[in-house]
Length: 177
View 1 (cartoon, rainbow, N blue to C red):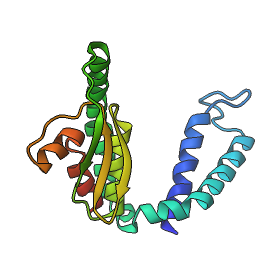
View 2 (cartoon, rainbow, N blue to C red):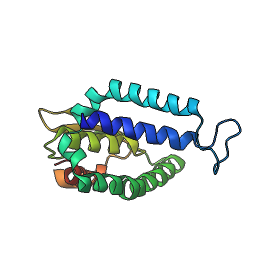
View 3 (cartoon, helix red, strand yellow):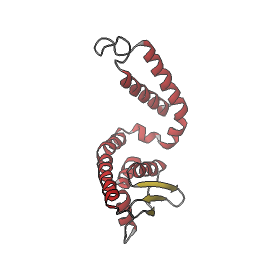
View 4 (cartoon, one colour):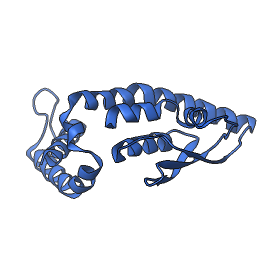
């Protein structure tokens, strides 16, 4: 129920923020939403919550939703750490494309994450960063298979993990475990 309510309220808030003041004759100070927009917002938020509650409920354990510190850490991670590495990876990929210094290959890493949510956060962070793509996630072996634009030489597993995903694994551990 908590997952359903969280999804519903989140979708409702996002929809209403996106359509605020966009109705016919509506100004920001006098009328933010028309009745039609409110009805559409509630219906779409309900539909989204009904369809996704099972999938999201499996991926997000209730402990994370109930713990504001973990949610705050996730927001902090997304808007500071991940965005910094996103910008850095964009510049790196642009440099490699311009200079032709591309050494693509497949890398296998073992991040040592215990929860499915932690592995999902890490896999998505890697995939959404330019130059890397999570190809496979093996829960039994606790292994991620990643296609990387610049495969380097690494002495040990820790150095390879740091090279391909930086601090993402540590942050996924802090958020989900």
